[in-house]
Amino acid sequence: MDSNPAAAGRFALGLLAKVRACGGFREASINYAGREAIDNAKAAFSAEGFVLTDDGALSPKVLSSLNGIALTDALAAYARRAQKGAEDAALIAGTGKDLIEATAAHVLETLQGGYPSSANFQALLGMAFIALDLAVPEMPEQSGEPAIKSMERGLFLSALGVNRVRNKQGSGHGRPWLPTLSSEEAKAAIELVGTVSAYLLAKLSKRERRAPQP
Image (cartoon, rainbow, N blue to C red; front, side, top):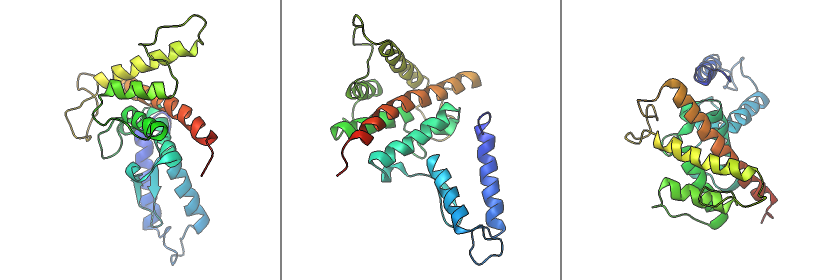
């Protein structure tokens, strides 16, 4: 699951297809897996950003239908998969939107009620960093500041570098990286997407869960 996410994905789909073919999702079948087993599988897939239906169909979560903490958790699932090198996790399924870009927009939507849709990647990311009280390169280093601020500036610059090697010519289908990148370089870019997104979402999640619920 960790060393070859693409193969793991093929295995999961094949296993589900086998269970469906044997009647594992049909209550009338003698091979019915049972409500508890199916509910457990649905919860496990949900934690990874997928929806498993009662009849065994699997699809990525439609993030446009989520908001608040539910969207934070769904994006975090994408980030975890990207950190393991899963290429499809670097772009939000079906939209072509970069995971970092989607995360930055969600941060601003959550903390400020909206974001400028016309802002470019660097501006959007900068606003998200500042909204979370994170350091950006434009903020000079202060005497005695925590060492983590230097790391945050590095994450920001890394995100800008990853965005430059994105293949923005397509519609979100196919390889999301420039064709000149080697497989090792593309894997590093994917993992950086996951790391930056996961850091932003962890900071946001801490605020969301601290906030009083209506």
